Image 1 (cartoon, chains in turn green, red):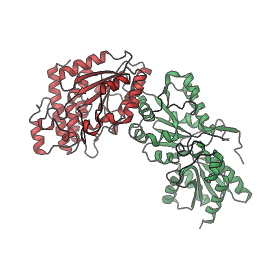
Image 2: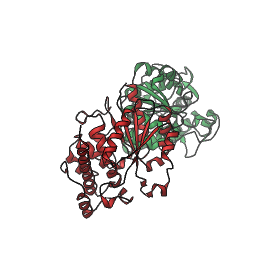
Image 3: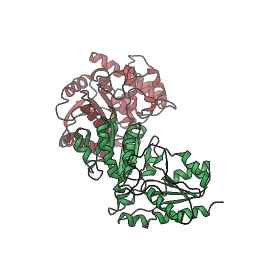
Length: 317
Length: 281
């Protein structure tokens, strides 16, 4: 199977590297941070482009408004803070000043999901994809590893319109090629299979590939598709795969409500009703702990995905 | 350059437009709109360096105005239409289905003159600071004006923005407070007293001045003075004393007309007090 691990890196560092390169490539790119420069890996950009870097302090609402304002004058603002403070805390600011106003702001959100770890549920958002998906005009992207996050960061600068870019804190397998192509809204087929499709996003893509390996040993061919763009959803990629496999597992580090699973289910219920199993956090808040232990505890790992796949296969008519 | 008497005449027409729009829609906010008609007239007909005929959403080399208290949109729409940003006949569509003149300003169908949606309160000052910073990056010497309601200052985001602008010397920004001391539920002092606004903004690092927002002589001379003090290292805010409902006797001295439209009889009575100077739409 392809996609061997190159190294272990955090996706937020992919964002930081992508932003630094954007600084050189596009003089209109500016960055704002709410007192988390190091956590968002924006230090290098801040040092190299101090005139285009705005430290706003712990004032996320003001940051979102300022970002909207900076677009009036032709700039492309990238805001940085944790995912919880990038969404729930500033939802109305994003809704009115950015999404409704069609502002070209890139909301870059780190420490998403339970892999934020020890800080616990106050900081672990599992609702952010849903919140952002609900906003008309918002593009929602959740890349899977360092290399893909870097490419996604560069791609969103070229896209005109508001974008929510979600990434995470811990070091995770980096397995996409360094020069991997990133096209917003175009899903990536990672493995080919005929028995079940696993639609995975973000930190769950690598565990989905591991699950496919487990299933392969049992003679089950799983097709793993990396849905890095949750909105707009690549409907063709979803339907074409499901036509072949006739059953689905969705996998995401998010609430079972409002995330990738809902998007896939809504599409398939209209176009191609199909048994679906969900790997997601089942309507509870997170808790403190090591990221890998939390992922296992909430069932967000390869063995759980493989089990869900077998269940989905059994449900086929 | 128009004489003060000409500006006063324009303000009278703006007030007529406000009454007719809110009456026509049977919905909207006449009180604050009437109170700010003099300011809007002064900004759009005298103070701001803007160009309606070649509206640029990015406002490059133009002064611009952000109406943070978006509910007084009738005053803004009238000022824009009377500057030929869009036809005055369009004022008749205010708050009606398929109109570009939404209840609160929106970028819907790229309505000329509107650069961002406002109405959910507390957001406009942050937006204005962002615009001001973009102007600095662009080496654009023009100014950003931002009007907020006094009740709006109860929103926490205003103070985040105030802290930022004070600390970072955003000196190409002029904020204004429509200080009519009334909000929907009653007088500010009954709902949530603002305390000493001058001292509060001074403590946040702003230069604070005050003016009578319903005296055209004072509005024009004060705005010119404040504009001359931009680019001098300090954010500026004007506490603009106004009367809600100004120009219509029975709408003054009460918060009742904050968000209530006049009926036919009331509209007629109001219009009888406001001279038609530029021709009704």
